[in-house]
Image (tube, rainbow, N blue to C red; front, side, top):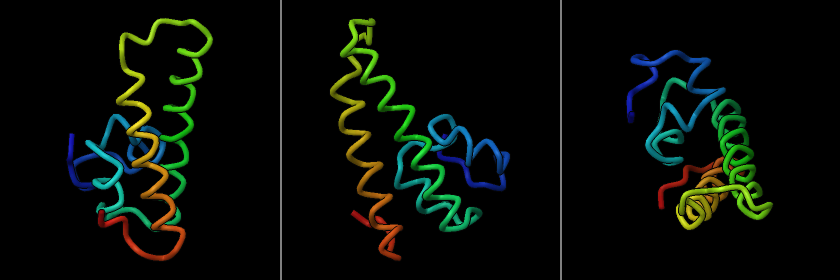
Length: 91
C-alpha cells in the first residue's frame, strides 16, 4: 500500500480507497486524484468503515477491529472536512 496513483489503477483508488492507501492522509496527498475524487473516495471509505462498525453493533463478529475502525472513521472525517474547506488535511 502507500503507492502513488501511477502505480495503481485510478478507478481502484477512487472506488476501493481502503485497499489502495495506508491512511486517509495518503489519499489526500495523492497528486493523481482531483479534489472532488478525493472527497468522493473518502466518503466511500467512510461508508465502508461505518458499515463494519454497524455490523458489530448488530452482533456480527468484528474480531476486535472496532477501536481501529472508530479512529479510522475520525481520520477520514477530518481529511474530508479539510478538503471541503479547500485545504489539505495536514494533521
